[in-house]
Image (tube, rainbow, N blue to C red; front, side, top):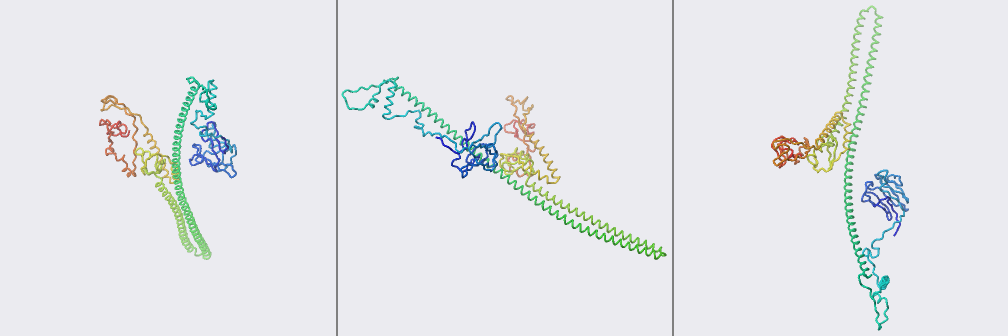
Length: 576
């Protein structure tokens, strides 16, 4: 039975899944990878909610790209995100991009407003269902007699008694009985052949039914496996969703904290700039007023001196003209007057020098205040550096993060510090949570590098030296933890030749890796009390002596070539 439906039909040669996406009887259809959408397509090419289809009041359908990662294409043209487009009959809808130029897109659909689809008849709609497969339908009454007559006529044999008696009417009892002939009932009779044929057909039908039941059971088993795989995939998707939400929340917290710190730094910088501007303006006004006053006083004194000098010269000239005779006395008086004037000039020059020294002192005071402002700024930056050291420093080495590494418990440490710690114990040094995963935190590294650029040259130099030193330590740590080849054994007191024992030759021991280095910080003394590995060490360990594994042979002399300690050989080394 065929019917017409409004749908999206998938295009492709070997298409088994998602053949039709029906739109009849729906107002909105969502397509994506999330199990909550209307049509769930499990593929990495499809986003969680890739596209949204809505039905207009006029009956037309529109499609919209819901900010998908790989995009949505209509007839080869990419749609803008969150922009609705009306679908027309025959439009080609492409979800995602092509994996390569030579291969077509994986999810390619064609839109039909009325596609003719043929529905397959169910098993119960057939004649007698699955149980009547391979069986001959039984005829009742006259139809059975007619069939038996036809079979007898085809074989050329007379009809059986039952067929004759049922076919002829009964006209009452007569004196002459009618003789009924029976067909031959041997092995070659048509009735026996027909019976055997029917038995064979029934046996074949039974075998086919058994095969169908086995196939049905197999299909049910595959369906259950598919459902279990689907449930596992849904569980993995939920876990991935929760993990991504947790990461997004952590990133949002970091961004919020960074934003707050930037706002505080901006406020402090604005306040410092405002105070600096106010101090500069105030000092400038004071210097201008003092300089103008000093210049005005100097000008007045200079003018007074010039006037006095002029008056004295005029007076001397008048006295010289009027009293020629008293030239000697006047000359003496003139000398005295000159000396007095020179003293006065010297005093005025001394006052001028004093004023200049006061001006220089004022300038020095200005420079001192500027230095105080710069020092205050440096203090603020140092306080900010201390704040960074308290918030963004590794709890193992008490330094700013170098190649910051975040654990699954959200605590962060330096890469080298946490690697050395994990060689001793697979637990977080702060919360004692088991370490399952760890990943690099590039955001913290870039943030610390940008903040260090604002510090003094001394702190920058110290940071660079620390980074270079830490890189060398990481290289040495990686080289030290590489597996080494097995070393050849020499001769010893325990035997002769190469590994000879009382029972015969002893095989060379397997290659033993170098013992992991143990770094203990002064600030982590409290954590050592809770660590069973450190408590298990005896006093003899500090002296270079350590007992080996139980049952391992040790001759009582020499050092272990694996860890270099006394008390055991490499075959019983606890660090192998």
